[in-house]
Amino acid sequence: MKNVFMVFILIILVCSCSFHQELKEDFIYEEPELNEVQNFYVNEDSLNQVILQREIQIDSLLSVIEEMNFTKDSLSQALEISNNRVAVNLDFQIPDSIIFAGRVFDLTNERINNKFEKIYKQELKAAHKFIPRSGKYFAIFDSIFTKHSIPLDTKYLAIAESRLSCLAHSRVGADGIWQFMPKTAKGFGLKVNSFIDERRDVFKSTEAAAKFLQNNYDFLSQRGAEDWLLAMSAYNAGAGNISKVMRKQGGKDFFHLIMQSDESHNFVWRAVASKLIIENEEVIFGKKFEREKPLLEQVRLERITLNGHYKIDDWAKAQGTFVGIIWEYNPWIKIYQRNRKKYSAINNVVLPPGEYTILLPKNCEKNDSQVTFIEKQFLNKNAGYFTHHTVKKGDNLYDIAMKYKTTVSKIKMLNGLNSNIIRPGQKLKLYGSTQSKTGFYIVKKGDYIAAIARKLGTSSQHLIQRNNLKNKNGIVMIYPGQKLYY
Image (cartoon, rainbow, N blue to C red; front, top):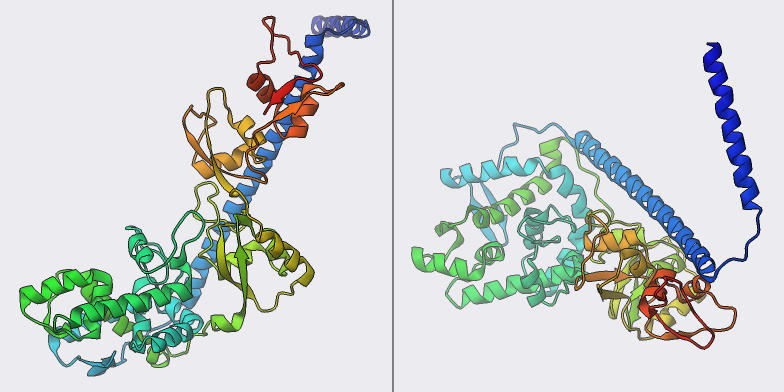
């Protein structure tokens, strides 16, 4: 034990001597060489990089928090579903007939009754979702379909398509409350791009659905089938396919045709079943579900015009709300991916040039002067807030992030990068508080690399590499009057 103690004392003495020697050496003043001064500034820039790394770590923590909130929301949704499960009256008698879109569904026919009963039972499972949502959207559907002289029962097709969810997305790429494919959506005037997806705009997508159905009806009418039920089947299967079935089977009536696709045929039957459930919910479930408040009673409309690409988070604050709430009422505005999740209500929202009608909560109080000031800024043209950067030899994510005043984590998130590895010629999507700057800076007396880099919003390494500032001995040299490109 004594030997161990003596060894411990010796270690302390040696360390003390070493520290004393280092301390003495630290206090010996030597005139610093130029490359040492430059290295100091490069080290200062390295500290900036460390700070940026800390910011990235904070950003990652925010992502974790967001993911936890996402999990919490999922659990809340599961709990809500569990709480909404109610007993079904098994003694409810399906009527002998149902009128839908002006046509009578004769359920005394055994074949038709068996088909309907099977689909009816399937639709019961989702009733706790679509019945409450009907209060939010049905008034909008009725208004638009009345304007286009389309049967009002058409609104039940949205239940069959999406369960009345504007966020519904199918595995084949259909999206929104009316489940438009991108090509079809664009054909009916809906915009689908990197910034917006109007398939999720309940007003515009319903207008498009009305036009689509009218086109189907007109197309089939020219072939002798003036049948809204077939026009509705064509919404899912395509008017051309319905026309082929008509030619093959020699019929022109919904009830006389056997569809080649169960999905397109069942599509209408599901709509009919949902109508029966909603009209008889109290008898079927022993209670009436609470409806969501009609959307138009929840919001006020604000129209804005943009002549460039702009973030709208400050505009949202001036309106008395924030982008997360705006996205809830306007899910057609895309919010950029974060950690490969679909959308995030805490990220930046950018809108391209155009005129937009934004839904805002009725109870939010706007600051008129701030709103006016921001909307005047929106009228200025800009080069585009969302841009691309083509990777050049020697580029790295840190330099690119500094150049565009963004962060490495945002660049990786936007481009789905799992690592910091990039390659020359690679095209990176970017958005930041400023656009890529091209130009030069004239060195002044007293300037040094780190200060110039901070002033230009770039890094010392970038300036050194871009302007080939190192001599053959590796020393960085700058002088007054020198032109530095950045």
